[in-house]
Length: 313
Image (cartoon, rainbow, N blue to C red):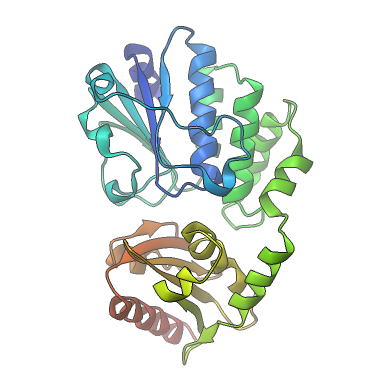
Protein backbone atom coordinates (compact mmCIF):
# COMPACT_ATOMS: atom_id res chain seq x y z
CA UNK A 1 0.00 0.00 0.00
CA UNK A 2 2.88 2.37 0.75
CA UNK A 3 5.34 1.44 -1.99
CA UNK A 4 4.46 4.26 -4.39
CA UNK A 5 4.66 6.87 -1.64
CA UNK A 6 7.98 5.49 -0.39
CA UNK A 7 9.37 5.72 -3.93
CA UNK A 8 8.05 9.26 -4.28
CA UNK A 9 9.76 10.25 -1.02
CA UNK A 10 13.04 8.82 -2.31
CA UNK A 11 12.69 10.66 -5.64
CA UNK A 12 11.86 14.16 -4.38
CA UNK A 13 13.46 16.95 -2.41
CA UNK A 14 12.14 18.81 -0.53
CA UNK A 15 9.27 17.00 1.16
CA UNK A 16 6.51 19.30 2.45
CA UNK A 17 4.02 17.72 4.87
CA UNK A 18 0.50 19.10 5.17
CA UNK A 19 -2.49 18.07 7.34
CA UNK A 20 -5.96 19.36 8.12
CA UNK A 21 -6.58 22.77 9.68
CA UNK A 22 -7.40 23.13 13.41
CA UNK A 23 -5.18 20.10 14.05
CA UNK A 24 -5.83 17.45 16.65
CA UNK A 25 -3.28 15.09 18.17
CA UNK A 26 -3.50 12.66 15.27
CA UNK A 27 -2.92 15.31 12.60
CA UNK A 28 0.10 16.73 14.42
CA UNK A 29 1.39 13.37 15.59
CA UNK A 30 1.38 11.94 12.07
CA UNK A 31 2.92 15.12 10.64
CA UNK A 32 5.73 15.31 13.20
CA UNK A 33 6.22 11.55 13.18
CA UNK A 34 6.55 11.32 9.39
CA UNK A 35 8.90 14.31 9.31
CA UNK A 36 11.35 12.66 11.67
CA UNK A 37 10.99 9.25 10.05
CA UNK A 38 12.08 10.78 6.73
CA UNK A 39 14.90 12.83 8.28
CA UNK A 40 16.22 9.74 10.08
CA UNK A 41 15.99 7.28 7.21
CA UNK A 42 16.88 9.64 4.35
CA UNK A 43 19.70 11.83 5.66
CA UNK A 44 20.16 14.93 3.55
CA UNK A 45 16.49 15.29 2.67
CA UNK A 46 14.87 18.64 3.41
CA UNK A 47 11.54 18.18 5.18
CA UNK A 48 9.09 20.96 6.02
CA UNK A 49 5.85 20.88 8.02
CA UNK A 50 3.20 23.50 7.28
CA UNK A 51 -0.22 24.52 8.56
CA UNK A 52 -1.96 26.57 11.21
CA UNK A 53 -0.87 26.63 14.84
CA UNK A 54 -0.92 23.59 17.12
CA UNK A 55 -3.20 25.23 19.72
CA UNK A 56 -3.76 23.05 22.78
CA UNK A 57 -1.45 20.39 21.33
CA UNK A 58 1.57 22.70 21.41
CA UNK A 59 2.92 20.58 24.29
CA UNK A 60 3.96 18.02 21.67
CA UNK A 61 7.58 18.27 20.58
CA UNK A 62 8.46 20.14 17.37
CA UNK A 63 5.00 21.56 16.64
CA UNK A 64 6.31 24.89 15.32
CA UNK A 65 5.40 25.07 11.65
CA UNK A 66 7.95 26.04 8.99
CA UNK A 67 7.86 29.13 6.81
CA UNK A 68 8.19 27.73 3.30
CA UNK A 69 8.74 29.91 0.20
CA UNK A 70 6.39 29.32 -2.72
CA UNK A 71 9.25 28.35 -5.03
CA UNK A 72 10.09 25.35 -2.84
CA UNK A 73 7.02 23.60 -4.18
CA UNK A 74 8.40 23.51 -7.75
CA UNK A 75 10.48 20.40 -7.01
CA UNK A 76 8.64 19.21 -3.89
CA UNK A 77 6.57 16.22 -2.94
CA UNK A 78 3.64 17.49 -0.87
CA UNK A 79 2.25 14.83 1.47
CA UNK A 80 -1.23 15.41 2.94
CA UNK A 81 -2.03 13.57 6.15
CA UNK A 82 -5.21 12.80 8.10
CA UNK A 83 -7.47 14.66 5.66
CA UNK A 84 -10.49 13.37 3.76
CA UNK A 85 -11.35 16.45 1.66
CA UNK A 86 -9.54 19.27 -0.13
CA UNK A 87 -11.45 21.96 1.76
CA UNK A 88 -9.97 20.77 5.06
CA UNK A 89 -6.28 21.03 4.11
CA UNK A 90 -4.27 23.71 5.88
CA UNK A 91 -2.16 25.64 3.32
CA UNK A 92 -3.48 25.19 -0.20
CA UNK A 93 -0.07 25.44 -1.86
CA UNK A 94 0.12 21.66 -1.99
CA UNK A 95 -1.70 22.06 -5.32
CA UNK A 96 1.43 23.68 -6.81
CA UNK A 97 3.81 20.89 -5.79
CA UNK A 98 5.61 18.81 -8.40
CA UNK A 99 4.04 15.66 -6.94
CA UNK A 100 1.45 14.94 -4.27
CA UNK A 101 0.66 12.06 -1.93
CA UNK A 102 -1.90 11.38 0.77
CA UNK A 103 -2.00 9.04 3.77
CA UNK A 104 -5.36 8.96 5.55
CA UNK A 105 -7.66 6.82 7.68
CA UNK A 106 -10.96 8.61 7.04
CA UNK A 107 -13.74 7.28 4.84
CA UNK A 108 -12.94 8.07 1.20
CA UNK A 109 -14.69 11.12 -0.25
CA UNK A 110 -12.51 12.26 -3.14
CA UNK A 111 -9.09 11.76 -4.65
CA UNK A 112 -6.73 14.52 -3.56
CA UNK A 113 -3.25 13.36 -4.56
CA UNK A 114 -1.40 11.41 -7.24
CA UNK A 115 -0.38 8.70 -4.77
CA UNK A 116 -2.81 7.69 -2.04
CA UNK A 117 -2.70 5.23 0.83
CA UNK A 118 -6.11 5.20 2.51
CA UNK A 119 -7.43 2.65 4.97
CA UNK A 120 -10.41 3.57 7.15
CA UNK A 121 -10.00 0.45 9.29
CA UNK A 122 -7.13 2.13 11.14
CA UNK A 123 -7.99 3.99 14.34
CA UNK A 124 -5.65 6.85 13.43
CA UNK A 125 -3.43 8.26 10.73
CA UNK A 126 -0.58 7.76 13.22
CA UNK A 127 -1.37 4.06 13.17
CA UNK A 128 -1.04 4.07 9.38
CA UNK A 129 2.27 5.94 9.52
CA UNK A 130 3.56 3.43 12.08
CA UNK A 131 2.52 0.56 9.81
CA UNK A 132 4.26 2.29 6.90
CA UNK A 133 7.47 2.61 8.93
CA UNK A 134 7.37 -1.11 9.73
CA UNK A 135 6.69 -2.18 6.14
CA UNK A 136 9.40 0.12 4.79
CA UNK A 137 11.92 -1.13 7.34
CA UNK A 138 12.50 2.39 8.62
CA UNK A 139 14.27 3.14 11.88
CA UNK A 140 11.98 5.03 14.25
CA UNK A 141 13.56 7.85 16.26
CA UNK A 142 12.26 8.52 19.76
CA UNK A 143 10.51 11.78 18.82
CA UNK A 144 8.61 10.01 16.03
CA UNK A 145 7.57 7.20 18.36
CA UNK A 146 6.26 9.63 20.98
CA UNK A 147 4.42 11.75 18.41
CA UNK A 148 2.81 8.73 16.73
CA UNK A 149 1.80 7.20 20.06
CA UNK A 150 0.19 10.48 21.14
CA UNK A 151 -1.86 10.59 17.95
CA UNK A 152 -2.98 6.99 18.40
CA UNK A 153 -4.14 7.79 21.93
CA UNK A 154 -6.16 10.84 20.91
CA UNK A 155 -7.92 9.33 17.89
CA UNK A 156 -8.73 6.06 19.64
CA UNK A 157 -10.14 7.85 22.67
CA UNK A 158 -7.50 6.33 24.94
CA UNK A 159 -7.99 3.00 23.13
CA UNK A 160 -11.70 3.04 23.96
CA UNK A 161 -13.41 3.71 20.60
CA UNK A 162 -14.55 0.71 18.60
CA UNK A 163 -12.02 1.54 15.88
CA UNK A 164 -9.46 0.13 18.33
CA UNK A 165 -8.37 -3.36 17.32
CA UNK A 166 -5.72 -5.95 18.12
CA UNK A 167 -3.59 -4.25 15.45
CA UNK A 168 -3.90 -0.95 17.34
CA UNK A 169 -2.39 -2.50 20.44
CA UNK A 170 0.33 -4.23 18.43
CA UNK A 171 1.38 -0.95 16.84
CA UNK A 172 1.18 0.92 20.16
CA UNK A 173 3.31 -1.79 21.77
CA UNK A 174 5.85 -1.48 18.95
CA UNK A 175 6.13 2.28 19.58
CA UNK A 176 6.43 1.76 23.33
CA UNK A 177 9.69 -0.09 22.78
CA UNK A 178 10.97 3.50 22.70
CA UNK A 179 11.13 5.75 25.79
CA UNK A 180 7.64 7.27 25.97
CA UNK A 181 6.46 9.12 29.07
CA UNK A 182 2.79 8.09 29.05
CA UNK A 183 2.08 9.95 32.31
CA UNK A 184 3.18 13.21 30.72
CA UNK A 185 1.19 12.55 27.55
CA UNK A 186 -2.01 11.76 29.44
CA UNK A 187 -1.55 14.69 31.79
CA UNK A 188 -1.18 17.13 28.89
CA UNK A 189 -4.09 15.61 26.99
CA UNK A 190 -6.68 15.19 29.70
CA UNK A 191 -5.97 17.32 32.77
CA UNK A 192 -7.96 20.55 33.03
CA UNK A 193 -7.94 23.71 35.07
CA UNK A 194 -10.79 24.58 37.40
CA UNK A 195 -11.93 27.18 34.87
CA UNK A 196 -12.06 24.53 32.14
CA UNK A 197 -14.04 22.21 34.39
CA UNK A 198 -16.52 25.00 35.05
CA UNK A 199 -16.77 25.68 31.32
CA UNK A 200 -17.62 22.02 30.65
CA UNK A 201 -20.27 22.18 33.36
CA UNK A 202 -21.71 25.26 31.68
CA UNK A 203 -21.99 23.39 28.39
CA UNK A 204 -23.65 20.41 30.07
CA UNK A 205 -26.41 22.83 31.03
CA UNK A 206 -26.84 23.77 27.34
CA UNK A 207 -27.66 20.24 26.15
CA UNK A 208 -31.00 19.90 24.36
CA UNK A 209 -32.74 16.73 23.14
CA UNK A 210 -34.72 16.42 19.91
CA UNK A 211 -38.02 14.46 19.89
CA UNK A 212 -36.10 11.24 19.16
CA UNK A 213 -33.28 11.89 21.63
CA UNK A 214 -30.53 13.37 19.51
CA UNK A 215 -28.54 15.52 21.91
CA UNK A 216 -27.20 18.84 20.66
CA UNK A 217 -25.60 22.08 21.77
CA UNK A 218 -25.76 25.30 19.75
CA UNK A 219 -23.35 28.15 20.50
CA UNK A 220 -23.83 31.48 18.74
CA UNK A 221 -21.07 33.93 17.77
CA UNK A 222 -22.29 36.24 20.51
CA UNK A 223 -21.93 33.47 23.09
CA UNK A 224 -18.49 32.62 21.72
CA UNK A 225 -17.38 36.23 22.12
CA UNK A 226 -18.17 36.01 25.83
CA UNK A 227 -16.10 32.87 26.39
CA UNK A 228 -12.43 32.78 27.26
CA UNK A 229 -11.81 29.87 24.90
CA UNK A 230 -10.80 29.28 21.30
CA UNK A 231 -13.01 27.81 18.61
CA UNK A 232 -11.37 24.37 18.71
CA UNK A 233 -11.86 24.07 22.48
CA UNK A 234 -15.58 24.73 22.08
CA UNK A 235 -16.37 22.96 18.81
CA UNK A 236 -14.25 19.83 19.13
CA UNK A 237 -13.74 20.02 22.88
CA UNK A 238 -17.33 20.35 24.06
CA UNK A 239 -18.92 17.68 21.89
CA UNK A 240 -17.60 15.18 24.43
CA UNK A 241 -19.80 16.53 27.24
CA UNK A 242 -22.65 14.65 25.54
CA UNK A 243 -20.83 11.29 25.64
CA UNK A 244 -22.43 8.46 27.59
CA UNK A 245 -25.88 9.95 28.17
CA UNK A 246 -28.23 7.02 28.65
CA UNK A 247 -30.66 6.67 25.76
CA UNK A 248 -28.70 9.04 23.48
CA UNK A 249 -27.06 7.37 20.50
CA UNK A 250 -26.42 10.48 18.35
CA UNK A 251 -25.13 13.87 19.41
CA UNK A 252 -23.88 17.01 17.64
CA UNK A 253 -22.18 20.23 18.66
CA UNK A 254 -22.85 23.37 16.59
CA UNK A 255 -20.52 26.36 16.99
CA UNK A 256 -20.87 29.61 15.06
CA UNK A 257 -17.74 31.32 13.71
CA UNK A 258 -16.84 33.79 10.97
CA UNK A 259 -16.18 30.86 8.63
CA UNK A 260 -19.62 29.32 9.22
CA UNK A 261 -21.22 26.91 11.67
CA UNK A 262 -18.76 24.22 12.76
CA UNK A 263 -20.49 20.88 13.36
CA UNK A 264 -19.07 17.91 15.24
CA UNK A 265 -21.23 14.79 14.83
CA UNK A 266 -20.90 11.68 16.98
CA UNK A 267 -22.74 8.39 17.46
CA UNK A 268 -22.28 5.36 19.64
CA UNK A 269 -24.21 3.05 17.30
CA UNK A 270 -24.93 4.49 13.85
CA UNK A 271 -23.07 5.60 10.72
CA UNK A 272 -23.59 9.37 10.74
CA UNK A 273 -20.91 9.98 8.10
CA UNK A 274 -23.34 10.17 5.13
CA UNK A 275 -25.12 13.08 6.80
CA UNK A 276 -21.81 14.89 7.29
CA UNK A 277 -20.92 14.24 3.64
CA UNK A 278 -24.34 15.51 2.53
CA UNK A 279 -23.43 18.87 4.06
CA UNK A 280 -19.92 19.03 2.63
CA UNK A 281 -18.08 17.34 5.49
CA UNK A 282 -16.66 13.91 6.20
CA UNK A 283 -14.75 11.80 8.68
CA UNK A 284 -15.56 8.42 10.19
CA UNK A 285 -18.70 6.33 10.57
CA UNK A 286 -19.27 7.40 14.17
CA UNK A 287 -17.29 10.66 14.32
CA UNK A 288 -17.56 13.22 11.53
CA UNK A 289 -17.63 16.95 11.00
CA UNK A 290 -18.76 19.66 8.60
CA UNK A 291 -18.87 23.43 8.26
CA UNK A 292 -22.29 24.84 7.38
CA UNK A 293 -23.38 28.23 6.05
CA UNK A 294 -26.08 29.17 8.55
CA UNK A 295 -28.07 28.23 11.62
CA UNK A 296 -30.92 27.24 9.33
CA UNK A 297 -28.73 24.70 7.58
CA UNK A 298 -27.58 23.42 10.96
CA UNK A 299 -31.19 22.81 11.94
CA UNK A 300 -31.72 20.91 8.67
CA UNK A 301 -28.80 18.68 9.59
CA UNK A 302 -30.23 18.21 13.07
CA UNK A 303 -33.56 17.20 11.53
CA UNK A 304 -31.76 14.60 9.36
CA UNK A 305 -30.07 13.21 12.47
CA UNK A 306 -33.38 13.10 14.30
CA UNK A 307 -34.93 11.15 11.42
CA UNK A 308 -32.03 8.68 11.60
CA UNK A 309 -32.66 8.23 15.30
CA UNK A 310 -36.38 7.71 14.68
CA UNK A 311 -35.76 5.11 11.99
CA UNK A 312 -33.53 3.14 14.33
CA UNK A 313 -35.79 3.15 17.39
